[in-house]
Length: 242
Image (cartoon, helix red, strand yellow):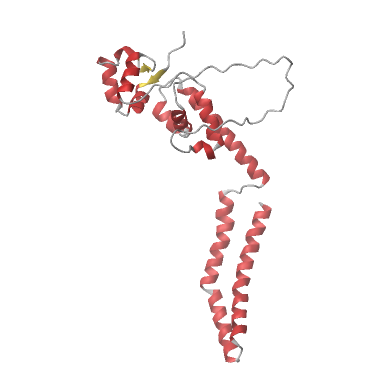
């Protein structure tokens, strides 16, 4: 006999789109009482199925157990690596999983736990923070597996971020704020005060000396260009050494 799929009253209320007190009332002395097991609800009990159906919600089928492949020959050992998985899409539009392979991995892991979650539900939990899962669903014993799955994905993301920083494909927020934004702020200050003063003084001298307008413009561009080149060189040096 397959084990019962028990969910919390909070989760049943979320699926039905009602308040938790409404579900609690029906569990204590209402039509949901036969489906209630202590503080949880048997998702497959006819009373629970009928209740969700009355709110336009269909109970998702149980996940089919995955068949284990048996190889005739002993498999050669291969270096472990991250497994690429398919990215299921939610009905009616493009899922966040299409652009987030880590989220797709978390959704597949959660779906395989046989908790009675549809792909849409699994994506809902996979996109939540561990703090929120613990705060809102910490009383559900089976959601320890969900927390573990999401935690694994968080560890993978952290490891990948570290690898990308080490190989130089990403830079830290601190480096951008301190050096890149610092250089741009310095450039803004120069363009607001010293540079205009310098340009104005040179323009007056050249105009009084009878210099043509094209030469005056060239000198003004050179003064401003020198400031821009200095800033670009400073930022490029920081990025090379990061």
